[in-house]
Length: 127
Image (cartoon, rainbow, N blue to C red):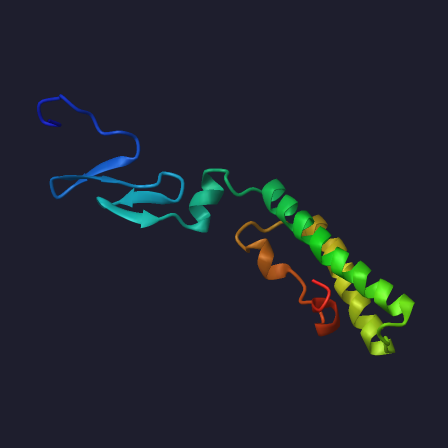
């Protein structure tokens, strides 16, 4: 049917070994007549991943993480848990790191998730 122009390939179709194969144009691409997954670089080139989208993602994650810090702080204030000076320092470092990540992120080649600070075990409890 393709040879007789009775049918045309759709945007998400390719002819491989005489068969029409569907692929997801959002997550896959065609290279040397093969379907492969897109890389981070492909998403950056297509402007799917941009500084603004990565910063927004980090801000949404930051809100979740800082909510856990708030719950931790409330537990400390109520006396449910005892906070040592070392715990306080780790908590402050964690919180300040989250406040800075979206503002200082400039290199799209590094996934922003790799820059997320690791919470302490006491903070993880409240997540």
